[in-house]
Image (cartoon, rainbow, N blue to C red; front, side, top):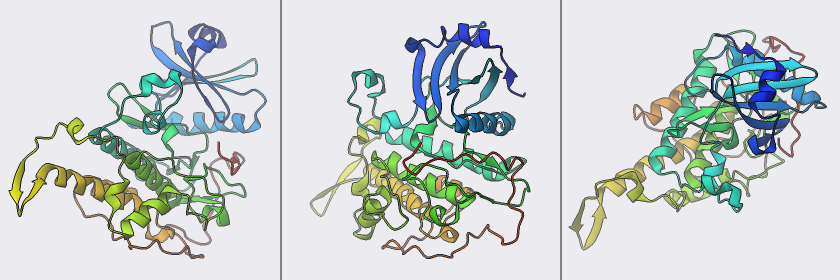
Length: 365
């Protein structure tokens, strides 16, 4: 069912006139408010900044892109409103908020509701949820979609802490189903999640989405922010560089968020004595599982796009169907040109609506 067109007065009433008491957060181009519609349905209403040209572009992109998508791991766009210069987007309400609020230590008393530490089972589930959403965008819907802004703050959690990918303001639909890339003169995305080739080519590809997913995997497991790189060779302050260094030393498991308690995973702990060492079988199994996910994250963050796994392969690894890709102990140098396996020179790079090319400065959204 297509998103509904709402009247401004309906959404004004639902949000209490966009009351600050109903404010849920602030995005790159507007505020988000909690609203209650006439049928007592809870929603989230994004109010796009009136004077933002980029915001208007995002508004159109959201309506034209996510409005036609349907997947359990995508935040559902319920409706929209364009009236009296107001641009409003209405989404399903996600009661647990965004993932980033649970991953990083919060200092504000206002964030006490997000003080819950997500256990490994929940984190692993969210990673799988996002992988399913991306596989759908890349391979499962009628027209291939590139999200272009995968990050923890764009992952929303429902009441059961299931993950849903949201914020399609930078997303673009590929005109031909067998195409996998989109060219632009402007760089879109968030520093720390952007693949190194993006800074040289300006192209968004399925591989650049995979790279951002890999960074997301690392921060979910490690509970660390991704870092903020401005050049493709400046990785020493990034989570990718840090985890890769530990991997090369054989210490990758030490990257795991120390707040994750094994007891929280309700594991039946079985121990026995072997050569005077106490061995926790279930803990070893759990660490092996976490290590596989970390290595998968590094594989997705390979500097060269043609070495990154597809989202189909990612899902197979997460489901235990195949082993993770081989990852070198030392992070390879970024070499260009190294065209993505999906990229074919000479293809028509145009989008369904090529005029909608939002720009996100390197300082982030």
